[in-house]
Every structure is written in structure tokens, then in C-alpha cells.
Length: 510
Image 1 (tube, rainbow, N blue to C red):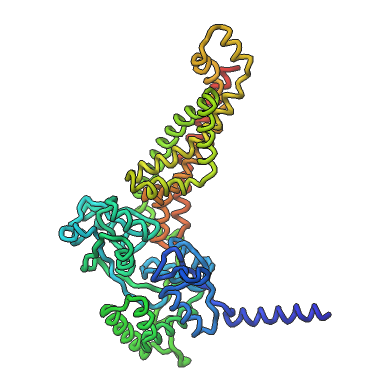
Image 2: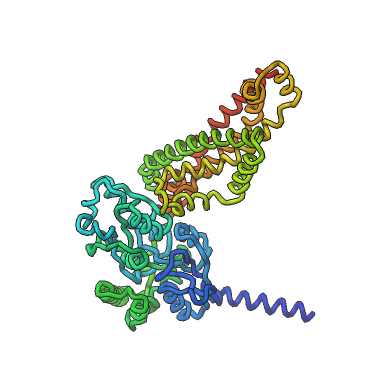
């Protein structure tokens, strides 16, 4: 009886907590972005620090809640917000038109400048985008800076290079892989302190603003947060936070003054009939999004050339990597079957180490880890990474196929006077190839999909281009479906070809 009463009380407490929005404020961010946004505190890694951390703490306090952090990759913040993975998201999130269409977005709380960073010796000649014709310029995908570079690619012949984080672009710039980086002045200032030999150009290429994002159905909570942010601007709380993190300047002061003036005008002129502020009227919610609307279809058509180009990169990279894997795999398998004990031991160690470590780690080591010794081009690093990784798996297929050929056939061939090379080429090899064909096909399809990992070394393949597309329209529905269709268009013909070859081999051997 007492247990039942306790359960009823707990359910009542949970219901009451649900009615007032909960005791916690789940906020999504990406701690990999680092300071001054969000990072693990070096003195206590279990805690977070950064100006976004302090802003969300302020908001949670005003709402009477406790902030709880939810780690989300930066590129997935919009989709996670829409799914309801967290209540609010902030991690240097830019205010864009597409974002406002898909989500409930607060008033901007910080204005940043998109600035070019170059190597110090080049500061005199690379002052703007027009000076970088034919040059490689890096930035984060799906940002205002990326859109600016894509536009500059058409007008000024710039070569945009996409990254998943804001650390490696500046490292590649220092090493000469890039000629410039276009990113927020906050990120640029942090990076030039970390990476020696870089200089920031003072002229802004564009301006943008950071906002808090919520799911569309959380518009009432968004309106409350709007008021909290504007009050924090008015009483100097935000200024104190930004000064603490050394990002306050005259432009931010002017931005806040302008925002406060606009807010006061809206508050005075947009009062609802019940005497409360009509936040939704002051910041009108976007109309509900129709995934398969004509505007969405036109967006798909506009992105289709980029997706087809990325598909070409994917298929070429996959074919070359598979060719390398097959060639190396045959050599490794032959060495493990016919080689001396030291050779077999060395090749076995290569296979086990390669299969026992993630391909993503291998790509990082090839492209970034070895950069002080050899600076591999991104495509070459991706080709070697995939080829060397899959060579280990292919070698096991071929070794098993070679050892599956009946020993009596091998002895018969040797009795006829054939050398070991002739036995391999004329008897053992063809039968082993027939046995290995099906798993080889499976491996190629797997490699085709694993090629999506090479975006970490700045190769823009199909999945990466799709992610950029999805980020720009704030939806994965159409981009994801189109991406899947393109992958199927590449993999299904290969599977049919493999089945046809298997049938011919089976008919020839019967």
C-alpha cells in the first residue's frame, strides 16, 4: 500500500514538473568547437566553460531551471533541435534564413564578422576574396562563410575547401595546403593565438549573428528567452560575459544599442489584446514547412549539379581505392601463402593492425599526422587511406580462396611439371578468383559507402555534399532521399555485374 502511494506521488510530481516545462533545461552544443564557445574546463574536464555556457546558465537561471548539456555534432544541431533532442541549442549558431524557416530562432545575441586569415608573409597581397582567384580557401561547411565562398567560386574563381571543424583549416593554412581561411572573427582570433605565422585581414567579408535555436513548437519558450536576452543586453550582463572572454568591442556595443532600440519600438507597438507582449508578433514564426513543396524541389534542382559532381568524386575514388586494395591484397595474400616465415609474420602484422584500427584514424594519420614529413594532397591521402585499409580485408579473402583450392589439384599440376608460378597463374589463381568474386563485390559496395569518411581530409564526396545541402535547407528529408538514390544508382549496377560474372564462371566450370 505504501509503495503504491509512493508511486502515485512520484507520478504526480512528474506530471507537475512536465506542466511547468521540467526542472532542467537541456541545451545542445558541440564541445569540440572549443573556447570561447563551449569547451571542457582544463582544470576540471567534467565541467564546461565558454561564453555560450554562461549565456545558457543565465537563461536557465531566469527560467528557474538547471542547465543540462547534450553533446551534438555541430553539423547536426539543427536536426537535433527539430527532433526535440534538447530544449535549446547554442554553440556559435548562425542566424540564417533557412534556419528561421525550419526552427524557432531567438533574437541575435552577438554579431560577428567573417574575416580572412592568411599566412603573415601573404598579408600584403591577399587582402580580399578578389585577390584569391584560383586559390584554395577553407571554411566550415553549411555556414555563411561557405555560402560566400561558393558565390566567390563563380565570380572570382576561388576554390572553396570544406571542413568539419574550425581547427584543421588554420593548421592546413600554416602548412601551405590552403591560401586563406574565411571564418568568424571570434574563431580567427583564437586560431592565430594557437597557430604561429598567421595574420587576420581587418576588412570584413560579411557579417553574421549568433542565435539560440529551438524546435518550432517551442516558440513560447523562444519568446521568453528573447526577453531574457534583451534584459541581459540592457543591464550589461551580456557585456560582462563577452568582456570576460575578450570578444567585446565597439561593433558589438553598436549592435546591442541598435537591437535594444528595435526591441523597445516593437514592445511599444506590438501589444496583444490581453495586455501582454506579443513575442510571436514581434518575431513572427515562419510558416510550416512543406517538405515536398515547389520551392524545395527547385532547391533540389539547384543542388543537383553539385551532388552529381560529388557522386563522380565518390565513384572515381572508390574505383581507384578498390583497384589499389585488390592489387595490394593479392600481393599480401600471395606473400602469406608462399613467403618465408619473416615475410608472413610482417604481412600478418600489417593485416591485424590495419583491421584492428578505425579507417577514420588511419585517414587522420595519413593526412595530418604525417604532414610534417610528407604533405599528401587530400585526394591522394583519401585514396591511400581507403586502399591500404581495404587491402588488409581483401588479402584475407584471397588467402582463404587460395587455400580453398583442393590440394590434389595442386599436386597434379606439379606432377605435370608446372612451376609454382605456373600453378598459381593457371590452376590456383583462376579458381581462387571465382571463389573470391562474391566477397570482393561486397567489399566494393562497403568501400563505396566508407568513402563518406574522407570528408575529414577535406574531400567533398557525395555524403559531405549532401550534408552541406541538408544544413543549408535545414532538412534531411529530400537531401537524404536523393543521396540514397545516387548511392543505389552506383552500387546496384555493380552488384548485377558481379552476379553475371559469377554465373559465367559457374557455367564455365560446370
